Each structure stands twice: as structure tokens, then as C-alpha cells.
Image 1 (cartoon, rainbow, N blue to C red):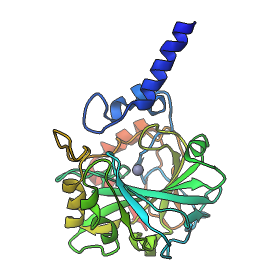
Image 2: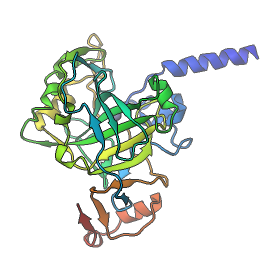
Image 3: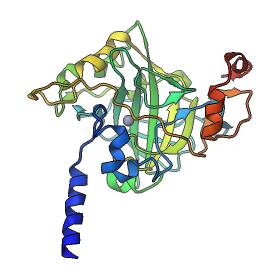
Image 4: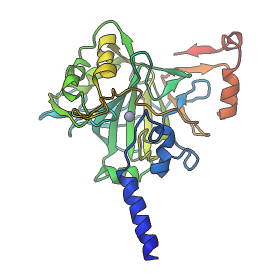
Length: 318
Ligand SMILES: [Zn+2]
């Protein structure tokens, strides 16, 4: 019995200290479930990300824009940008919160971070009708009643994450420059730098904030807790090619003194089946009309095989 307890302790402590990665078979997203049980695709059914398949969405006219408190203001103090080896994270301190738009409570904004691909590949986590975007930004908000993140992760609606797809154009995004200009200071894992607060609203597609998709899912990184109300916006944020390249070429998953320096590429988790979950479009969001197939994985796969001419009959509505 004592031996069993000792073995269990060793197992648990190993699990806690286990790190994860995106690029090596022994620690990539397909093996996260070995060290983090909630990440196992067969044990849990509410994984994120998913493909936002607009042929299989219902619309909820009651889903209006979220209330983004403090997003239009310049917060006091300073924020911290950090390379944690898996992403670049901007800790934004207190002063901002999200509510409304069908969220069950008020959520305080904690941090935002990014997922990207490589020099020639896209790296958003959510895909839309099978299309992967160059990048995705997540604004993480924690339900106000919880004292800390571990309490929030035990609540099925403990976190509200706002997902913004990022696409590229030729012109720089001046608001995004607040972050991209600081990236060279956090090139290596463990590095952090101060960032002067700026109104977060400038980063967002402000004219299209009533257009989004909603579903219940998980963290997309270990421990993969199924605690997230997802709001993924339809209209992307636009940044320049060179701003994107700063992520794909200047950020490393290794520490500065590492013998072998590894660029941080493709830090996104693969999409998971919706598994019967409702994925809802807000009152103003675009859905695809013209099919009436049920939201099942098999049906989705079949639809993907339909010839282009058949797909041409589908009507797109904004
Ligand atoms: Zn994320």
C-alpha cells in the first residue's frame, strides 16, 4: 500500500513537471494526453479548437455584442510581455472586463497571447470552413467570482476566451505595433519586458464586434481544461507581412543560452470534432445556407467531398 502510494506520488509529480511542445513526437499535441489526462481526445469530448463549419451553425438573434469594459481606455501602471516557450503572452493587469453577449457572468481580462505558423504556413487554431488563417490572438478572461485560475479551470464556464483570427496585408497595423515592436526583447524563452498600456480596443475589428461564433470548449494548451466559453470573431484583425514575420522568425522556444536554438513555429493544436456540441452564430454573423445536414463528423466529411459545382449552390449571407 505504501509502495503503491509512493509510486502514485512519483507518477503525479512527474506529470506536474512534464512540459509540452508542438514539434517533437514525444511531447507534441497528439501526445499531450499521456501527461495531461484531460487532453486525451477519447476521454473528453469538449476539446478546442474546432473547425467553425458555417454550414452547420444555428443562429441566435439574442447574441449581441459583448460589453468590453475598459478596452477603450489606457490603463495605468505597466503590462508585461513574456516568451513562455509556447507563445508570447501579454499580461494586462486589472482594469478590464467582458460581459454580455450571452456570457453567464462578468469576466476579468487577464492576458492575451498568440498562435502562429511558420515562414510559409498558417497557424491559427480555429479554422473557418476548413480554412486556417495566418495567426490567432486569444484574449483570456476569468470569471470574476473565482479567486484564482485553478478555481476557474474547475468551472465549465470559468473562462471566456475571445478569439481573433489574424490575416495579413501590406500595411502595418499601428495598434499592433505596440506588441510587435517589443518582440525582439522577448525572443527567447523566459525573457520578459515591460509594455506601456494602450487601449486594447485598437487591436480589435471594432466595426464588426457583433459578428462572432460561440461554443463551449477547452483550453488549447495543457491541461486542456474544459472550462472555456469561446467567442471567435468572424472578421479578422489585419497586420502586415513584416509584423507576422516578426513572430515566425524572431521568437524561439529555447532559452538564450541553449546549445541548439529552436524557432517557435506552428504553436497551434489540431482541430477536434464538435461532437454534437452546438456552435452558434451571433445575430449579425455570417452563416452558410443551403444544406440541412446534421452536425455530425461523418456528415461533415461527406460534405467536404461534394464537387465544387454542388458547393456553388450554397448561399453566403453576411
Ligand atoms: Zn491560445
